[in-house]
Length: 303
Image 1: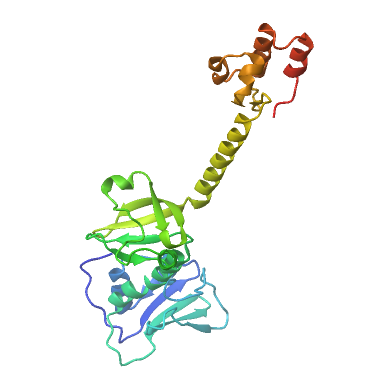
Image 2: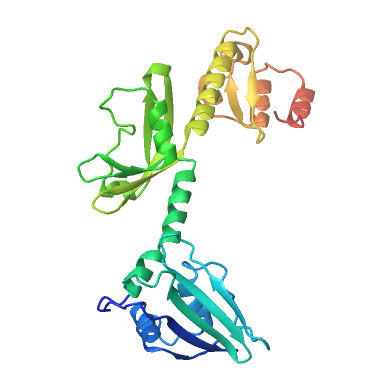
């Protein structure tokens, strides 16, 4: 963007002429100043269209010639844009005119373009941010929360806590931008907790914070641990000796009764022997009497 550009009055229409191959052949003085002001030097139709596509929708992708002249007016995407764009297609190419819809306004055309061409992008960014299924928020320099998206606001309303307590008890730092930080959001009134991995990036004298919801994964891990603990307690009180092997035929779990039945040492069992070594040691200490057991066990399908 040219920081030294001056104001451009749009009291006269901007006029551009493009030939059939898309090259710009001529334009009036105001149109030339406009192109210079928006840093569009010697454009063809493609770059000209790209520069204006954020302001005017459905602009044709190519210059099409017509035996009989046809004109079409393209209205702006934003209601705040006071301009309209007209394309006249004819036998040698296309004439383009950008003019005010209300002729008595005093408008700086370059400043207007800089503002209005960014509006569709800003609306898209806002829409994407608000529809994100995870909290995103801005932490200001004083630690307070600035902007936040819809998911943050929803979670903020759901979680019961002290009035002055922040939703995420987390202070972003420069070091926090290198890797995610695991943060727990506690809902004391409902005896519930939510887990998030938070990544922060420095932004506008503060930080933008992005989260990944880890609640389902951590809940599954907790349920698995509880199941294993319950299973281990059940095994521990059985009089029957139990030994569980994984798909690689390594010992993963056993109960105390196995010591009494097999006379195998705790050191041997905690070293996670494989199935064949387990059976060989049983035979060695005469806990298993038949070699046929070794053959059967060695060929058995693992759990």
